[in-house]
Image (cartoon, rainbow, N blue to C red; front, side, top):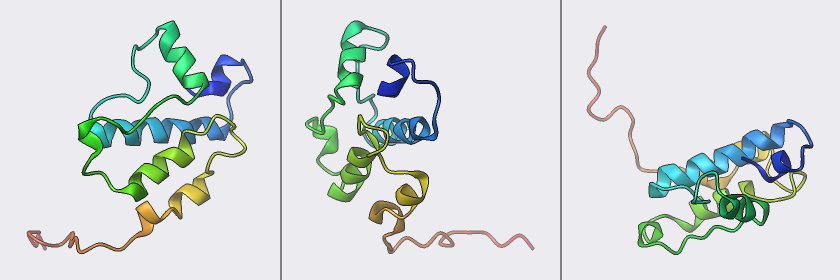
Length: 108
């Protein structure tokens, strides 16, 4: 949950961006940024955006991907990336050598 949820400030779009940061973190390393689900420690960590990239599973993750997460897991919702900024982030827009058609089977 985003930090503003704990302040009872209600739902706003930046909450979704926080969630994207949490999901991206999980997808890239396999565990949640704020462990101890449902505990006081988890709430404490969320309210302070207390997470890190120190685990060995982060060694092969690009700095650009980490920057994307860092800019989404920002305590102040007004300072967090908005949807347009997130979609324009270099981690999502950088060209790659990946060819999505490689190995594709023509069906018609």
